[in-house]
Length: 139
Image (spheres, helix red, strand yellow):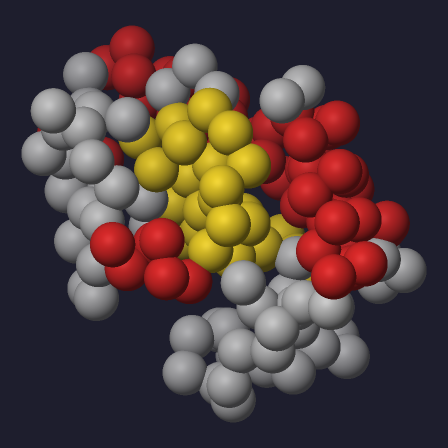
């Protein structure tokens, strides 16, 4: 049975479900950032997905990229570059990060992991981010 690792619950907010993935907004206002978590029990690596599921995941990554760009635009920080990563060193459940980057962001040009402390979204900004993402993803 599919369950979301508690680490995601503590660091992100649910947006909804696509065909394969549960989508969450990462709780760090420094970066427009979505996390895709395939709703398949026990998967840790991309090769754990069936070939058809891998195809769906790629399409959902592209959709998440559009949503992250929409969040960035809505927050007045248009995206200059998208970062897509599947790491899992800390949280092994298969998940994919889709992050908007700008040359003036807190971590540029380095990866976002381990740079400073996450900043909480203010209520208006998180509402704006959630609406932009849901509209773009059709959720």
